[in-house]
Image (cartoon, rainbow, N blue to C red):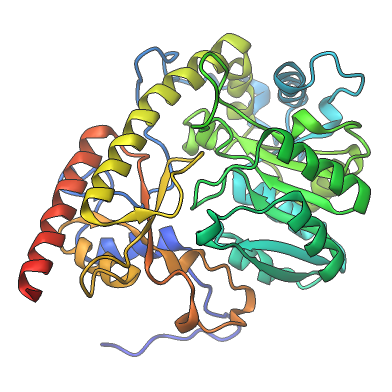
Length: 424
């Protein structure tokens, strides 16, 4: 193996879990859309037509003015449309309403999170273990704040109550908490009265909630007839005073990840800060795609897309859970949201009982998964990877189309059976 080339002044930048496993798959011949491969590691939903869903957008008109830069906080009309959507979905009849000035548009989820991270002061910022892999470098690159890990226990179903939150905020001196809700990878959802208590507690203790809601339309615990969505926006009292910052976009909930159109919804002072950060970090998103996004926020479109996605993905979720369970891969809790199953491999024969061992073996069968240790968010590598609590876990995505999932699970079944036979 050739010596690694080192260029002066540049550090080695870690790859997130999905980028790592995809890169390793490329070494084995994987290419996107190759029908011989099954990608259960993907972090995007299937993007094609679904029964009952609105027609997909196949063309985007580019106006003369669209050749210019978009404003860093985003096209005003889209900002208005996002604010109006939140008011209609979550704030009907409430005196405090979001406006365009409560919304900032970014070129992707990571861009919106990075803008927020760059705007934080010298504080203690809490984050959960396990959680989204991309948080790791995000929490390390900005040195103004100190990242404080909070371990969630699988034995408790990754539960974290408002009283737990109070203890962490007061005990560790947290000024902010970063959380994905529903959680990537466990699928745990904080909702209803419990989420309301979180918001009240944030207000009382002056601790800002930074809530990644990119999977907020993938909710599996809703009541029949209820639109299966949840957001902390529902429980905010004053949109300009409550310390609640929300991140979402077209990426997952509208199934347009390639558009890179996302938003931050927050008090006006926060929006001013993240827009200022965006002016030196990324310069703003795509103007024509922002304009094209406006009709997608219409009530009828949102309802039809959400219900169609829910029907298809709920079936994929249930099938994946059932087949993994039969293999001896159990979930500490069935996912309340997202399109992932956080599978515990401890009951499988070696080396499949280890996330990385499972990944390597599945890769030989052209199936991609993401080892659980990548979700052990570890800014600055202050803890040894060897001690990761999540080495026996793997994240399985039911984002791909049904046929691809079925093929992948069939190959995994063969892999487990052959490994067990060899060790018998």
